[in-house]
Every structure is written in C-alpha cells, then in structure tokens.
Length: 538
Image (cartoon, rainbow, N blue to C red; front, side, top):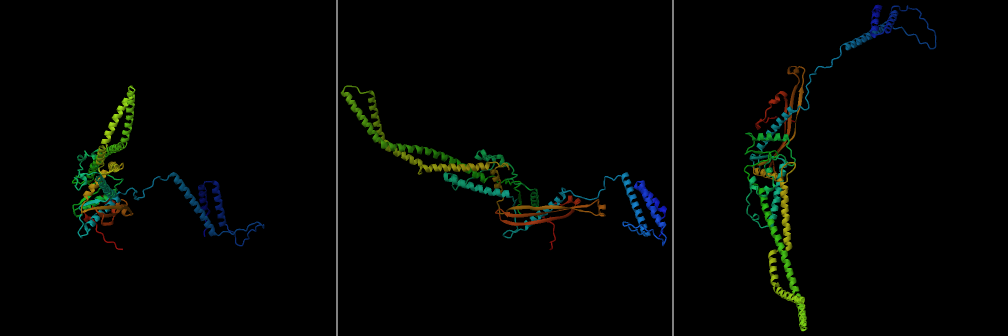
C-alpha cells in the first residue's frame, strides 16, 4: 500500500490548527504528522538488532510497531475528525450570520372547537323530527279495545305539575262538598235540598259584588300561567312537542277533530266554558256561611234571653219560698209597733215620727209581699213557658255547643278562602286561579276521545368527523368536515282515566352529512317522510 506523501498531510494539519484556533495546537498536530511519516518512510532494516533497554524493575515492555493498515486507519480517523470539526465551526458561523426564523409554516390541519356543535345539533333535531313522525305513525295504527283505529279528538301533552294540579283540584272540591254538608247540617237552607243550584258565570262582572270580588285578585284570573311550583320547560321537550304536533296535524296524521294542547306552556281556555263549578260552589258556601252567621246571632240573642228567663225563674222560686217568712217577720214587727202605739196613747204621749213611718212601710211591704206571692205562680209559669220556647227542645248547653260548631265551620271556610286567594311568591298566581285552570283542562279533556301524551327526550347528541387526504385535499381546499346526530325519545299515551294505551322508546340516527349541505337539510312535513330502514341482522 502506498504511503501518504508529506505534502498531503501537512496542509490538513495547518488547516486543522487554524480551525481549532491556537498556534500551539496547530504545531502539535504538525509534529505528530511528521513523526508518523518518518516511521512510515524509514522503517528498520531486517535483522537489525533492536536497542536493548536498560533493565529496571519498573520498566514497561517495548510496544510492538503498528502495521501500515493501522497507521492508515488512524490517519483517516484524524482526517474525518478534523472535517467534522470544520463542519461544526462552519455551521456555527452560518447560524451567527443567519438567525433562525421565528415563524413556522402552517401544518394544514383542520380542527373543530368544542363549542362548534350547532351543525350536529341541527342533525340531532332532524332525527328528533323523524322520531316524532314515527310516534304519530304508531298512534295511527293503534287499535282500541273494540278493534277500531284510535281516534283522537283532544290530545294534551302530559306534565306532572298539571296532573298534580288536577288531583289537588279534586281534593279541594271534595273538601268543599264536605264543608257544604257541614253548613247544611247547621242551617235549613234551600241550597241544602235536592234542588240544583244554578251555576255562576266566571266573567269578572258576574262576581264583582260577591265575596270573591272583594278578596280575589281579578287580574290573576286573566294571567297566562307560565310556571307552577317551580316547573321549567325544557327546550328539547318543547321541540319534540312541536314536531309531534306538526306530524299529527298533517293530512295523514292522527284522525279525529285533532285539538292539541300543551298546558305546561299555555293553559287551555275553552271559550264555550262560561261557568265554573268551583266558583259556583264557593258562592253557594258563602251564602250558607251568611245564613250560619245570622243563625249564630239569633242563637246568641236567644241565649241571652234564656239566661234572663232562667234567672227570673230562679228568683221567683226563691221568692215563693222566702215570702211567707218575710210576711210573718214584717207582721210581727208591725204588731210590736202597734202595741207600742197603744202604750203611748195610754200615756197621752205622741208616738215618735220615725216609728210611725216604719209602721207605714211595714204595712206597704206586707201588702206587696202578699200581692207578689199571690201572683208568683202565674209569673213563674209564664217564665218557664218562655224559657221552653227559647230552648226549642234543646238545652242551654246544646245551644252553646251549636254556636261553637257554627263558628268553627265558618273559620274553616275562611281559612280555605285565605288559602285559595294567597298568591304564591314563585309563580305569581293564587291557588284559585290554578284550580280554575285545572277546571278548564278537565272540561276540555272530558270525552271518550281525549288522551294524555307523555314525551321525553332520553338522549340527543352528535359527532363531528374530519377526513384528510394529501391528494384529495389539494382539490377540495382542505380537509373534509361532516357531522352526524341522533336522538332517543320515549312516549306513553294515556286515557283520561290513567289507562295506558300505547308506549315505546324510539332511536333515530342520521349519518354523516357534509358541512356544506347542512343548510339544505329538509324538515319532514308529513309522516310519509319517515325513512325506510333495512332491518338489522344480528
């Protein structure tokens, strides 16, 4: 193998020394290269004796001379390291001359913010609309007990607050019936017979002069009830209700007169309903209460007379018992004074004036006592007859208990009225207004073809999908964005008696739709728009 020429090594050493930045380092590199070249050019002759080192206990063995291949490899290593150092130095110089840019090119990714859900929501609502179509389709094919198709004249959306209100209304009317019976036990009134009482009008002018006109906030009867006992309307439920009503109102929707009500949002107001059973009952009770108040006044006056007659009879009885003794005592004193008068006359002395006056008073007293005693039996008999008339076959204690009972019933009626007209702080209406609303609701749903429909959105949501392709994105201007959505809805149809007619839980899913096509999504207008699906095979 040819040896490297001296002129090939030295320039590299000088360049390395310049790059390393110090004359001392460069000199060291040159000497090392010269020594290597000298060994390679002047090798030791064959058979020549190697100089013997002096023996020393601590001397190390003489190293074996390196081969030409190792020398070449070492020189190559040195050259590669020098070139590496030169490259690092040149990179540092370039970095210092040309700083790194502070901006980076766009990566070309498409991302969706977590709040960007309107597209998937629109698709979810579309799925909900299809679910509403399927609900109406189920109602169309539902059979009644006699095998005929279901006919719906009046359909109201179920709400727990409305049902509770109707139940409370029934409980309150039952209490009013019991209260009326109590009134009728206390007074003999025409209302308590078999005669049917004419219903009162619920028009404001019809009750201005009554007790309701004096106590009830009339404007409350005209307000629209928005919420009851904190009930809130969920927008998802409202959307499903509107879609069900839309599908049911279509030409191929449910059969019948098709009157739809959503009492939770707007209470039904039947223009034909001009009377109120509740107000009629309250007016009737108010009249009975007035009669009871008159009866209480009469009985209390009778009790006063009874007390007087009872005292009169007691006095007459006591007089009859004590009068003979009183007459005898007065007569004895009069006899004593008469004897004293005779003694004064015998002595021809005048009797004292006070003694004469005393004799005259005693004579009048005896005369009156005898007269009163003679008429006492007749007076006692008359007083006893008057007392009997006042009692009317009852005792004084029984009459007092009757008055207490009347007052208690009146207090119950007053408490009931106070409860009915008390305005609730949360809803801004009173119970009487709410009960009139329940009465309207019952009147509208009073029929064989009236039903309650309970709706619930169990779950609704959607997904966003981004598809990217290096080739396709060049022609589409970026990644392709699409959205999907679905809904799970539940329904139960009940009769006005609470009997379940039909129920089911439906799932609807609309696959991924390109973002640019979402604005052209159709709104299903009829039940026939329900998509036909291929049965799933498991």
